[in-house]
Image (cartoon, rainbow, N blue to C red; front, top):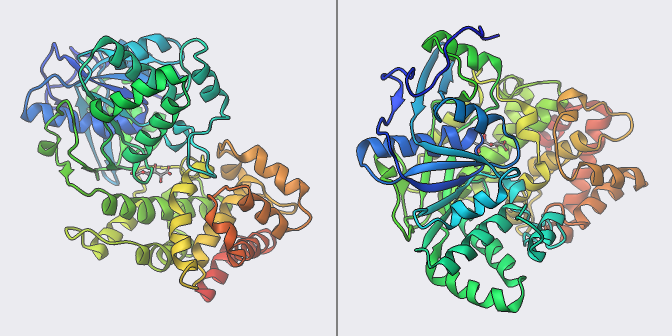
Length: 498
Ligand code: CS2
């Protein structure tokens, strides 16, 4: 544990050598929804580095969704915190000095709407996780039955959903005559900007006619939604990382964030009201983000899911421990090379062999302690972005993507272990909005096949896979093999079949 007597990290105590961007009196130009570790180790670091190269009104007001822990710690530390870039035998600490405030939306929802509407706000960015967009996994459209969305559409009190907060803030911009704004999704959704724009428009369209028409019109000329690809592995904070800060800086930091050294950001340059000079920080601007996004969503995130579920079923707490198991590494290679890579157009500036080799090095970063339960959580919304399109790519060409079926089977075994399977503590710790519903399906079903068919029919992975009973059968086979013989046996069977 960190010694309680150490002085606190704050504006006065931050060592100059660690501080990234040192101007004070920064104006707030960015309102960021989702003050979690990822934003603080990714966009915030890019913004601090950009401001070192080119000044501008790009301070960030960070908005946490419901937990006050980070916002309070940041307030007490003058919005300073350490990003601990960590790999075996090395750690580097960077303190980005770019936040100008921290709010908790659940406590001050009105203040969030106000901040989005403020004329000085030029970018509203988001890292609210896949789950935060309140889309229906089946249709991919805004879930109009979601209780928060329903309440927000009725205008009952301050908005509770992310899309509701965004729309109410944008509506207030419209009414107050505020300048145009860019909404920047930095979550792992395919076409994240397009999806966000569509969800915002769907919400607007569901408002009473008097409101929806003018808002739709305003959105067309006063808001842009660029697509982005974001990448950096950022685990949850533990005492071990706070201890690194205590050791290196001699300071106590209650808001420290661990991260791998690798970082990447690719964006479409469609910022209607300016932006920080993120290119000076290594961000890549391009007209076509999609190939980068799909490359990352499938090769990194899709494979990550398989590693996490197989690893958890095998009793492994962390991704580096999981990938050190030869059967998990083999399955990761197979899903990546056989099932994901053939569905992609690799961008010209990326060498696929080097990219893949680097992925395996990144997953093996044993200093990072990235937990299988963290990657495995919210699979119902994550897998929807990772699995169905590549699976359909193969199925429509008459090929069974065995390792995608294995991914879905391992996920189902973690969420709703069939009788006779002990999925272990790491699977039990994964949180997922669909877990209770999946268990109900499992209890009602008379066979594994019925269970898998019911889940896929309900649209867990969208609508398309329903047309392919061979995929359902394959998932069911793997669920049975995992239940009877374990995850390694199922991976061996997938490898033989592939
Ligand atoms: C992970 C991602 O939790 C997950 O689903 O696959 O958070 C992953 O670590 C990041 O996208 C890396 O950029």
